[in-house]
Length: 232
Image 1: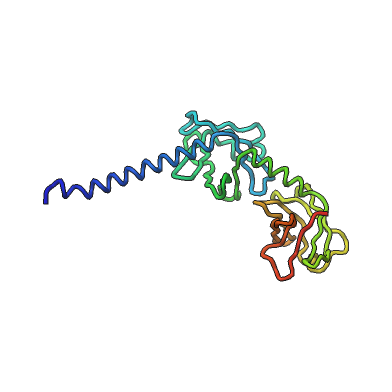
Image 2: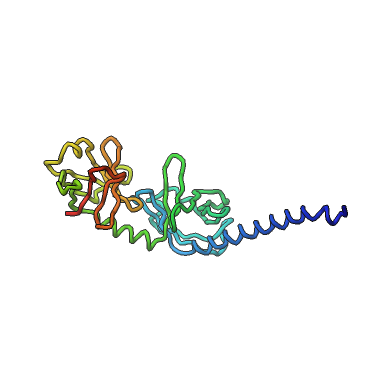
């Protein structure tokens, strides 16, 4: 066998590796271009937020980033952010001046990135316009609601407020006359998270409600006798 023939498989492997590397570079470049603009970095329940502006100009071992003035007070760790970069195929890194990660975020839904800081919890980053639309949606949730069985029987009336409770949740107040199912659960807080209304009990248990095609909110997973959360 000639030397040329013996080398051919190795050449194929090298070319494949080069092609894969080029594809990864293209993917990272595409993600970097998609990230240019204004974003909201927030706690998972969006109780504390920070507006970031990402650009492609070079800075501090990465690319330029601008943080709004209120960021340090809302999210103290953002004081360390000096630049941003794309790592691998899908990681957006907010980093310090040395290029070390302050927080790494990966896309968990279209346009929504999630990252974790040890000892602090989950943080989300999403397009600022989309985040502000979500804020308007949350404001629309504030007010009087009823928990209603599928038969149409109301078992409790409650008020969802914008008064902050602990862990970036908001207070719930039950009206008198609520049935034992609700008083036994004893919701004291609520939040709007990823399209769900979540009621939170004093012991930390949760009820999740998702909007249906009839503009009602159904508890999930659904039971034989559905439980609906309806605006009054």
